[in-house]
Structure formats: C-alpha cells, structure tokens
Amino acid sequence: MFTDIARVVRAAALPDAALEADPLDATKVVSGEPEVRVLGLHEGDAVAVGVWQHSTGVSRDVEADEIFVVLSGRATVEVEGGPTLEIGPGDVGLLPAGARTTWTVHETLRKVYVVA
Image (cartoon, rainbow, N blue to C red; front, side):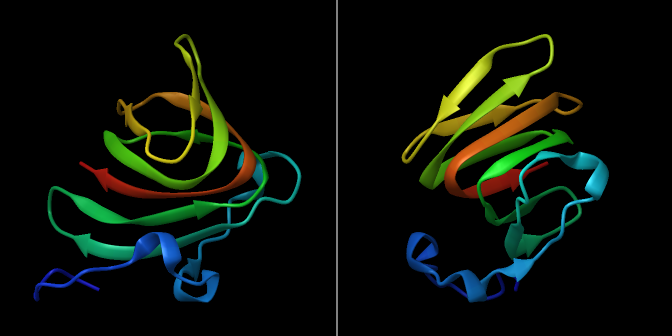
C-alpha cells in the first residue's frame, strides 16, 4: 500500500492476518520462535513507513535510521555498546543506522515505524 490517497489505518486494532508474515532469518533468532509480521504503508526513495509486529522471543538485528511508536506489547531492546531500552505502549523510540540490537519481546510488540 502506498500513500496515494488520504486515509486512516487503525493499526493497533488490525487483526494479525492483516499483516504479512515476514519470516526472520534463522541466524537472527536467539531464542524462542518469534514471528514477525509487517504492513507496509509507504515506500519511497528515502523513507519507508509501516506497521511491524514481533511475537514473544528474542532476535538480533542491525538497524537502519528509525523512529517508531509502540502501539502495544512490551520489549527490552539492548543496543550493543549503548543503552538498554524498555519499551511499551505510547513510547517513541529512536534507533541509529548500524546499531546492533537484541530484541527481547515479553508481550507481542506492535509498532508504527518510519525508516530512512
């Protein structure tokens, strides 16, 4: 989906089936069997916007420049060489490009993201 028309997406209330499965690479899974789902809302040359969901479990990632708002769930995000972030509903997070993170998701996490 793209932003070619004005609309509202009730992202917090979307059923899981409205988000596409985006399987994690097995090398990124640390523990559990986390599942990732995504709903892309906009993708342009310089920015991508969407809804991202991660079920309980632990995974690693290397981040792009990202701003996100947590809609539901709870997680601990450990940034290698940086802070440990406790995130939950209503929190706004900022992640710099290249940050190596470990996501421990305690309750299925759903967020709206903007990636540059």
